[in-house]
Amino acid sequence: MWILKNSKTWTNYSLNSILPLPITQHFTYNHYSAQSNSFMAQNSSTNSLNRYTRAQPSPEKSSRPAFMSGLVIGALIMYFFPLINDSTPSETAAAVNEIVDKADLKELKFDFYTLLKETEILVPDDQDSDNKTEQGKDAVYVLQAGSFKNVRDAENLKVQLLLMNLSVESERVKSKNGDIWHRVLVGPFTDTSKMASARAKLAENNIVSLKLKRNQ
Image (cartoon, rainbow, N blue to C red; front, side, top):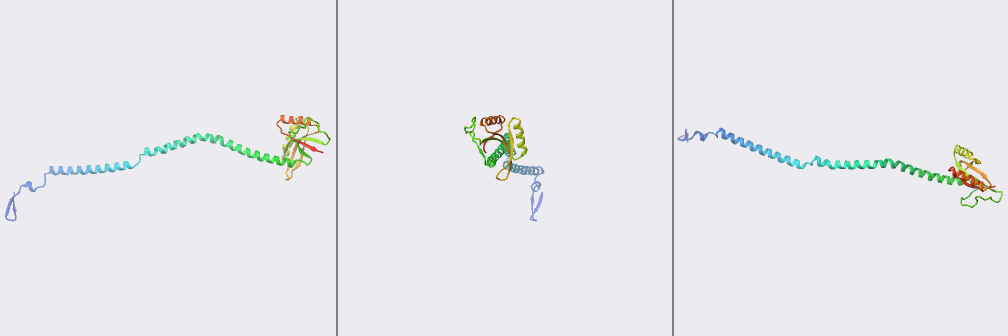
């Protein structure tokens, strides 16, 4: 093909030299470029995914410590719950009873001495006067079987002692602080041997008595 060059010279150019690349070569080049770009994009995406995967903790590994902690706490609760359930009420009741008993004991000791008449004397148990007749007509003994603020409690004990064939009397006394008490007394006795026999009968029926001496 002849082409005019510089308006004077004709130059022979082949058709292939001025035409673009063949269609097959052009397609192959573009296809290779597309595959290369796709591979690079895929490789970049894979690297990003790998970095994300390494950065994220494993759900299984992260949940395992919490699961083990739950098992330990549950086991401790199951182990100590019966002990707490069984021991706490009894220990609480024992502590309350101990406090109440101490308070009642102090009150009884205080009220007992305030209830004694001026003519009454508490005779110690270790005094060697049993099985002997006291000299003198002024020695009279009584056994205090109980002392109650409620008159019904005193009457119930009095009936119980009468069924035991004991000589019983009750009296109403006023303490120094103004409280009213009802005393249940067995006796009186002028012979200490008879008093000892009556006291032994009270002890057989789980009744604790106090030995009092009255001076007339």
